[in-house]
Image 1 (tube, rainbow, N blue to C red):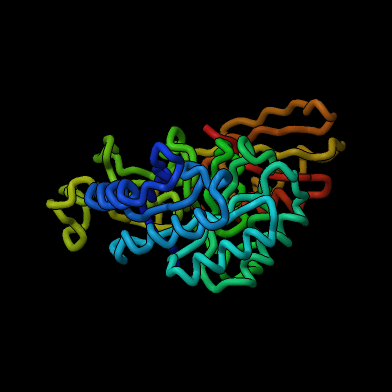
Image 2 (cartoon, rainbow, N blue to C red):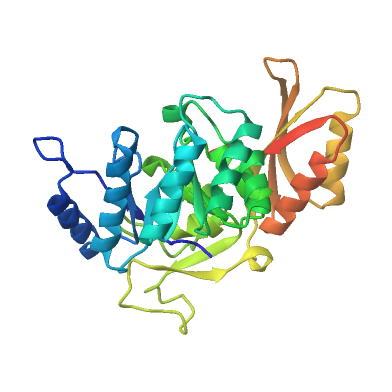
Length: 340
């Protein structure tokens, strides 16, 4: 179950002139955000300059935010560190203080391996019972959680439930959603690509509706595959679901294989070049009755074959089937949906 759906606000850590935490101002900021309709409070994250807080400040800021929030919205506490022991201690203290979930950034500066990341997140998760959102922001940390690594953690560690993706790569986010069958809670850490991310996860806005600034569409990124949506006040929406008073809300009208209209998407296949590669790919597309609009081939800088396929599929289930079958072809290294 998601810690929260919608948009969570990352709160700054206000300071006095003497560099002590200004708890009066912190309470004011939290009340202002909740009154404004935020869906969650994220405390002691990057915006809160957590890396420069002392251990005592970090602990006390999280505890104060929980007290100020008064259970009105979930509180997600930033507890990641470049030291696993420190991250565990902060996570345990946040749990004891009453946080609803944890946001754990990758260990910064250390440049952990993918195996190291699995151990880091597993040890944190085993030390607490709270749900954990992994935080992937390689531009700041120098460390990228690859989709395969995030999927492994999601599938094998019970209380790792989501990821905050701030890579700026829609292809990487799409790959992760594919590997987890769209079940991982995916939060966007890049405001500029939220709508593109929604589209890339196969959210389809109904033709009679158009998103406008302020619309509550962020939550659909967590469950994007094959969703078609109407605005809640749309006269074409299901009367049982229609709520004219909630004009900025969106409601699902179809899901997965129930989506009737086909959509066009692009797949990129990276493979070891060999004689029958094109034939094998064409056989998969033919056997799955997938319409191909175009197919272009070129070489990657490291000498592998890169095939770009524009295909039409009726629903997300067929898309997953096609991608799975393509990955099974001898020599194929990966199949992805690029951004855009």
